[in-house]
Length: 250
Image (cartoon, rainbow, N blue to C red; front, side, top):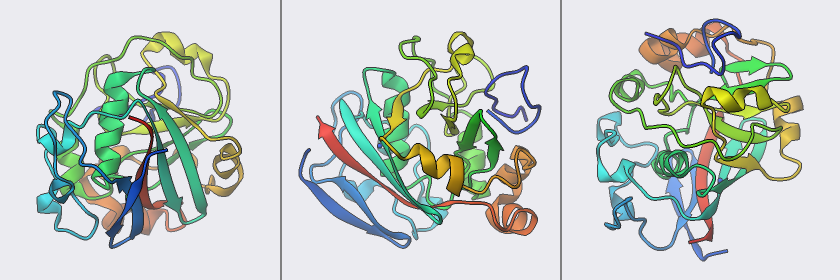
């Protein structure tokens, strides 16, 4: 299985979020959700009760074609994450990359990133995450879950978030934050869809554990998960504890 990369010529192997809100509690802690039910890309409402919540059986996680995974992103919203080393917030702009923003919104609204490890740390380049660490779910999203690319609109400057790929039209669940101005990625199909709020880049530069670098094997994460692979081989790897969405502009 081909690893998703940031650039083919770089490190081989593993590569490359104010409206009223309501609290949605998962086993990993509370996360912010919209008070109103979200809608799909074609305008059909999806009840929040149909969204996956951390702690439910992984057999209930929606497949890529499910309405729960076809949500339309608000125009602007905040993705709020709690990690084992502190919180960070991303401001997502749908007009930067509509398809990417929609997929990321669907993932966050279904608690996909709860438990995900920051499995790749390329100093002064990127920090990457986006494999859930549950083989049943990760395998489902490795096959048949890709979305088409968005046209290039914004540049991969420091602090912006972008989907990792393994070639054209292969964005799925993995994302990375640029630790530097990686503008050379712009012509390689990497289209940012959001940015860290001011100051939160410090968590990625100085708090997320960088000791494992790029040693983690994506195929092993997908097939063995957190419990059988990452927790044993990389016990101090930083990870996401909970996530949520806060609407800025519908």
